Amino acid sequence: MSIPIPTTLQEKLDGYTWKRNTLGMSAQHVFHLYHPVEPHKPSYYLKASPGLAGECARTIWLQPYLPVPDVHYLWKNTAVICSSPRPCLAKC
Image (cartoon, rainbow, N blue to C red; front, side, top):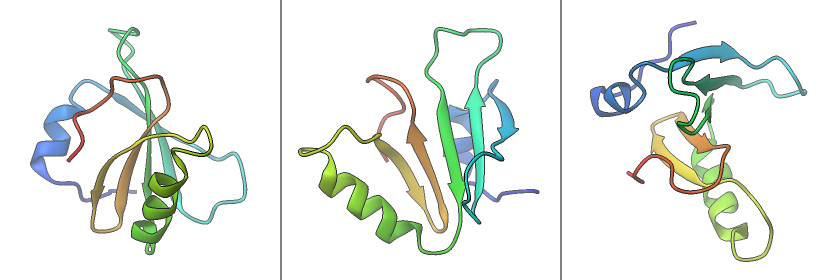
């Protein structure tokens, strides 16, 4: 599946490998992004689905109360969520 993402995000993820995440029951398109050449770089999860703005808003709201991942990028129906400790992508 091809996921349209803006050039600025493509540049930030240059060199990352995309692996489709088939675990769980999510109907969304979820990908694990990792850097095979530079493993010290943070890994991410990219989700593409309608309605992600609401999910991202709830995730951000929960951050002071629960250990939830950081939302680092939200564009249309695509979100990038950090799966490792800070720092990750600069928030957009």
